[in-house]
Each structure stands twice: as C-alpha cells, then as structure tokens.
Amino acid sequence: MRYLFIVKANQGPEPTPALMEAMHKLAQREIQAGRMLDDGGLAPLAMGCQVSVERGELKVLDGPFIEAKEMIGGYAVFDLPGPAEALASAREFMQLHKDFMPGWEGTCEVRAIAGSMTQGR
Amino acid sequence: MSQSDIHRAILGVWRVEQPRLIASLARLLRDVPLAEELTQDALVAALECWPESGVPERPGAWLMATAKTRALDHLRRAPMLARRHGMIAAALEVEQSAMPDFDSTLDDDIGDEMLRLIFTACHPLLSPDARAALALRMLCGLTTQEIARAFLLAESTVAQRIVRAKRLLSESGLSYETPQAEERSRRLPTVLNVIYLIFNEGYTAARGDDWLRPQLCDEARRLGRVLLALKPDEPEAHGLVALMELNASRNEARVDPEGHPILLMDQDRGLWDTLQIRRGLEALGHARMLGGGAGFFTLQAAIAACHARAQTPGDTDWHSIVGLYNQLSVLTPSPVIELNRAVAVSMVSGPERALEIIAALEDSGALKNYHLLPSVRGDLLYRLGRIGEARAAFTAAAALTGNSRERALLKQRADALESGRHVEN
Image (spheres, rainbow over the protein chains, first blue to last red):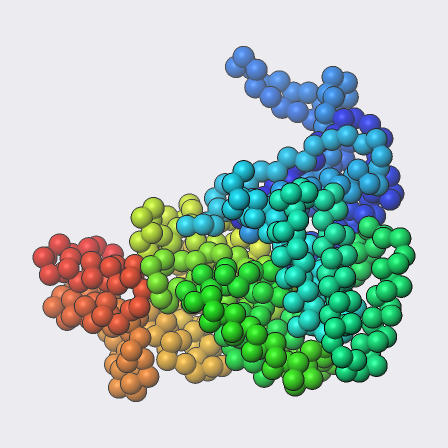
C-alpha cells in the first residue's frame, strides 16, 4: 500500500543541518529497505502560488502569503505493508525532529493513496 | 484498542526497524542465522513489554539494546566454541557499559550487510522454497505465521523449513559468507528467481480461493527495489523490477468485487496503476540502457510494456509482442513461453496458425497437466466458431486448475457455450 506523508510546520526557521543530516540518513535506510519511493522538500511558499475557486470565481494568489500560518515543508511517498508500519514510520520521522531540532513544532499527516490498496483482499 | 490491534501496532514498529536491526546484528556477530533469531527474540520481548509500558520513544534503540543483551546471554551460555565468540562478547560488553547512543544505529550504512543477507537467504545450497521463506523472513520481516498464510502452508511446515535452512547454512560454514563480486554476479540469477517466485506466488496464485495475493506481490516488489538500490548496474535486476511493476499495475483490474478473475483483454484499463506503469517503464529503460535488452526478465517486461502502453485492447502492438516472444523462446525454450507465443501469433496471423503451435505442444506432452493449454485452445477454437470443441477444451481446463476462482471462470465459459449464450470476446 502506498502512503503520502505530508509534513506541515509553522513558518519558522529552516531545518538545522543536524536535522537535515538525520533525515538524509533515514531516507537512505528507507530507500535501501525498498520502502521509500519518492521524497522532497518544498521551496519557500513565496516561490509558489495558489489558484482557488471562490464563489464561482477563479482567484490567483502569488505570495507573500502573510496570513498563512502553517505550510507544507516536505513530502514523501512510501510503499508499506499496512497502516501499522505507516504509523511507526511517521513516528520515527517526527522523533528525529524532536531530537535534532528542539523547539520545532509541526505535523506529519499520513494518507493512504487510494487505488494502491489491493492489500487485504 | 484490542489485544490484536496492539500486537499489529507493535509488529509494525518492529518491521520498520527490522532491516537495520538484523543488518547491524549480523555484522556484530558475524552470523546471519543467529542475527535473525535475535531480531525475533527482540520482537517477542517487545510484545511482552510494550502493551504495558507503551512503545518507547526510540523503539529501534530499545530493540537493538534488547537483542544485544540476548546476544551476550547466548554467547555466555554457548561453550566457547571459538576464540571469536570471546572477542565478540568482550566487544559487546564494552559497548553495553558505555552510555547508550540512541542515534548510533542511524549512522550504520547497512548496504553491504543487506547485500550479504540477500545472498545468504538465496544461497544455491538451499531449496527454492527455503530461499523464499528465508528471504521473506530475514529481508521483509514477515513472521512464520504470515509466510505460512501467504503460501497456504501449515505454520509448522514453514517453521521447520526455516529452521532446517538456517541449520544447513550454519553447518556448511555459510552463516557469514562474503561472496566476491564475481561470485555475486554468478549467483544473481538465483536471487532474481527467488524474488520472481515470491511475486508469482502472489500474482498467479496457483492454489487456493483467491486469484491474487497482493501481499506477496508487494513484498517481492520491495525486495526488487532493495536489490536495485544495492546493485544498480545489473540490467536483469532492472528488468525484473520492470516486469513486476508492470504486471502488478493491473492488480486492481484483474479481479471483480467478488474476487473473480478478469482477463487482460477484458480489464478496465482505467484501473491500471499509472504510477507503477511509469516506474515499470522507467526500469525497463534502465535495463536496456545497461545493455540488458535481451535478458529473460527484460524481454518479459518489454511484453508487459506493450500491454501497458495500449490505451485500448485494440491498440496492442501484437507484432512487437510476437517478436519478443520469438526472442524469448530462443533464449529459454519453454513450453509455457511457447503457449504465450501462440496467443500472440493468433492476434497477428489468426487462430489457425496458433492452433498449429498448440498442436505441437500437445504432441510433446510437456504441458499435459497445465490448465492454460486447453484454456487457450478453447479460446482459439471459439474464435474459429468450433463451438463444441471449444466447450470440451474449457471443461478439460476447468478440471485441471487448482485455483477455485479460475475453475469457476473456465466452467462458466464452457457452460455459456453449452446453452448457446456465446460470450463475445
């Protein structure tokens, strides 16, 4: 089953080098275990834009998004046996943040990707 | 949370840590079978402790510490067979007395060790069944119970198979072998075959009530990726990964909601998994780039790619498929490949030409118990309007298959011809 991990955090300082290194090592391990399919950090929100539909109108917003408190900082796609492994994997990932960047606050949202759930038939 | 939910959660945590755990222990103890046993001991310990204490913050470190304590017990208990034991024990004790370093396990580059695990589990000395069981256990972290369920075997049978395989490795002095690059290359086909066997056990489920057991397909695909990450220059490893991704991309479309099989040409192609197709085509490209275009797995992947690229059944490039099957039957002459070639030939040159190939196969007697031989024959006869003969062929095929879903499908096709309700292809 495939899972999308989305990491959201308050707008704040960039990840410390120590955290970056720890995440890199974890990613290496996950690739070697055949479980991580893709991952990436996202460039600052200011370099992106938002297109939305509101009251039947298209609305384009292209920064600097002062109102946005929480933003998506990165994502990863995993291929894991099931929800228990997905939860364990996300816990481990967030523990790294706790250990290597004290004071950091954020959320890792774990979502099963629909259509990849042949498991358990 | 029920007891079994808690166990499932703990198993999940353990499984995430298991590759690093077994790799580090194997390196430390210079003994793969023992390392495997200790990771299992650590799981048992976690199942005892964690329901009470909760999952620790750093479960990997906890499991590693537990396994190391057990290792020390084991080494102390075992008579000093070799000086090596004493040295390992001393090193372990020094490490135990030092401050526990929680993220030291993250620093280990386990690549070489994983490679060693793969080649140990897939040792040519072991039977193919034992290789598959060991690989699932050591590399995928499946429990004996899960392996037994996946292969529709009794748990005791699998347990015995694993114990015997590990004993054979130990007694043959293979508990920590380091095959050199040249030997690795020589033994790579065995490794690829083990992965392919696991995949096919899930993909074509020869026995039982489910036509598809996707868990095994998923494990095999992960194993393929492990191998690719470690040996990125082997074209056939890319070919195998391509073949597995492309075939598995159709899993959702291969069974209806009741679990009945749906044949390739009848599948809803909108249900095919585009990410897997993309990854499969990418791996196929790598295999070819590395000069492996004519390899066994790569050729099969290329055939699967012809289907994956076709938006509708009518778009299928049967000419290319026939060419690939021709290459494949020269490379590894096999009656099953010949049977598949017959299907492709029928799409290009018509059913009569294909029936000639089938007749030759029947004369050779090679596939006399294989249900797909009469099943394909039935198809071809049906397309020629030879309804009575087609019905007899489908009935014969139904009697031969060991899979109940497939039997039902074949019976249904025979019955449809009986009552004159011809199913249009």
